[in-house]
Length: 304
Length: 246
Image 1 (cartoon, each protein chain N blue to C red):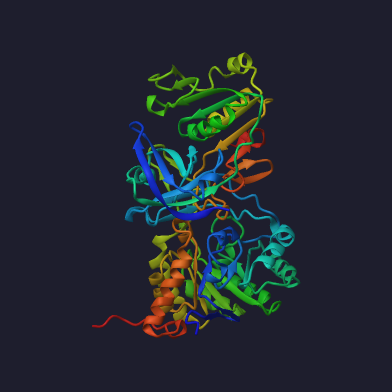
Image 2: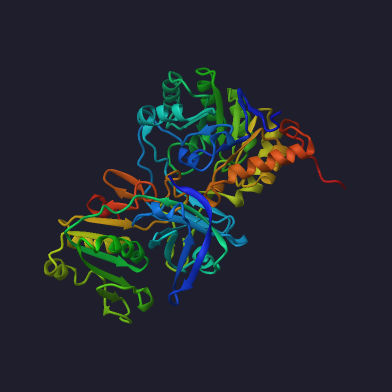
């Protein structure tokens, strides 16, 4: 019996562990077996290639990592010709393609192109990347826009449609409701918080773009609270991420209502974080004679 | 193919107030190491548990051991400086590409501060079949390692000034065919500006996260795009770098 089996909307996952878009690459499979993961999510692709932001792009803070990569990617054509064939050959686990657009029409056009390709299990719709001025944030912050985008995309695909939500909004539950009503079949949350760092000796920002995405340890309580909030607002399956490192972290998110989790920044402090998480979770569930699915959303209030 | 291992510390000794030399036991990895390649290293302390690894160039290989010469500048490198022989630390590597080797050339090595170790390693491999001139600079005396001409900004060792100040003269006097450099980007840029027509391979330093090419955090402007120091470098043809953007 696979106690770790879970599902994310239409996807059956053999492991509840996935990877945060943009943090992971198949190079890690030199270090561990891919079936530790339940799915593989690509770096976000856009219609046109993107050079990304100038260096310096990253800076480590007390409890997390700042980044301003700027969605560097080879564009849809480059992805189809160089990346997708390689991923199809290499992966035995479901492939989720993350993409972003500058208009509803562009999101639709990318999806229509990807629909013609085999070997893709689902899409992650990046409406929340805070790094790039036009793409992403304007979509993710407005419930009406998220609803319209979800409607447009859901009508064109029967594949898993994951909307990735930003924490940098007034009420994430309203965005989750809008995505769900529009047809999103699952929700990934949270994307990075805003963050910045300045060298106090020189007064200079540490990164080329002053306002970065902030990820890592510090995000965990924020992500957990928002996971709970969204789980209360909608029945849509949740892929939780934000500061998760250990199997104990993952359990907290399952209790809060997540069906699966993603690791990101954790890989940079421990390349084998997913392996340890997988083993720890498996051992724990065996000891308790439980299946993961029995824990999801079962968080309760402290005893008086 | 890089590996992620716990490696045993064979030796860790202070070289001076700022630098230390670390020797790791790595029989399976030592034969794979070439000049320019690096490891992501991290001490196994509680304070370092959630921290990034530090990218450190290979300084040399002796039998089953790999050496690193490290400047203790922040919490990550200071934690590495405190490891004891017999203890283990986390190592991901070997990573990155290596310097192309030459024969029968007049070679100039230009290094600055922590840029010395990979060029010291390279020098060991090139010296039998080439004529080598190694010039090296740093902020002060502690930054200085064995070389033909040393420069310090504060004048506490070698000549006072920058490592590039006598470069035009050296290029002519030694009839230099090829340059290898490693150090701060402005130093490498200055070398390239002075000698734009001489083949020049530079190993770059960068703030780094994954080390495997996944995060795109450590890029430099090269050719028409941003390339990753960890996975596309760290050795680049200096002429390909868009110096006007640095």
